[in-house]
Length: 139
Image (cartoon, rainbow, N blue to C red):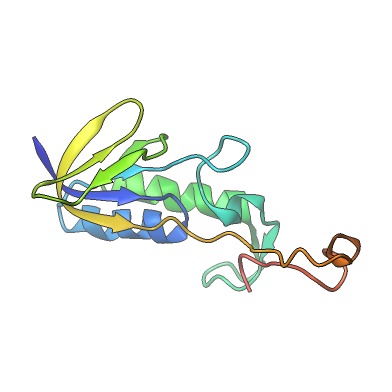
């Protein structure tokens, strides 16, 4: 069977893509991937108060927000696999996407793998990390 759409990534963008694809009856398959610590969900999984997301006037904890978005993607029909993608083959159609556990063919791929803060490796950087130098998933 050839999937309509495979989504790689499980942060806000990946799950939101799954919600919209599911609402369009595309039956999205999501490779959630694993973050350091073995959990999917992107940078918001390590964020405390999210105060700038619409609909939560008192704020919400990052993991709680991601859980709600994940639940909504599943309710819209997304099939989730908590696996890292190990290869993508775009050389012919249908495309191929695989993990250590499965290989799927798909008509389209959405890559929503997020971002990671890049440190500059300056000598004094560790001393000032989170004390003037920081990276913020929600800013």
